Length: 188
Ligand code: ZN
Image (tube, rainbow, N blue to C red; front, side):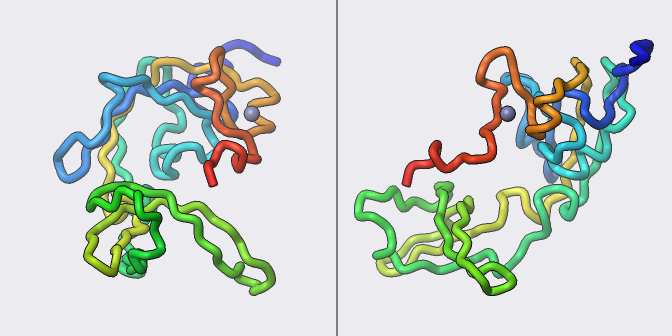
């Protein structure tokens, strides 16, 4: 392989470490300033599509501002994502507070109508009354334009195993994304 300048820029199958700041409606909603930068495999759809698209070609140390429309971020806001569920569907000791994010198991028929699919979905509790819990299945940033400011602080070639798995394997397990079968890590 020709090593010269081989991975001095962001391209597919390169492990990228990014410092980032995310502003929405003029406010910082997420930043790596007081946390770890994000580490991911470029081209493996580990980050929102518009951000992945926007960083191609960035050099080590380069800073870039990337504006991501909702469709390439966390999706458009969908009114059908607001769902009412009977309060009795929840365990008695469940913390039913507006603003709380929960994971819901859904049983949906697949598009060909053949089998039932079990899916885990994130939802936010909108409101709670005596009989009904209103859930919002939209991502909290759905419908929002994402204003990223990012800086590339490390680039390295991915291993064959990482490319095969579609995610990064770190020196410690903090960077290890869950492998294919994630069911064992989810509490029933
Ligand atoms: Zn793996």
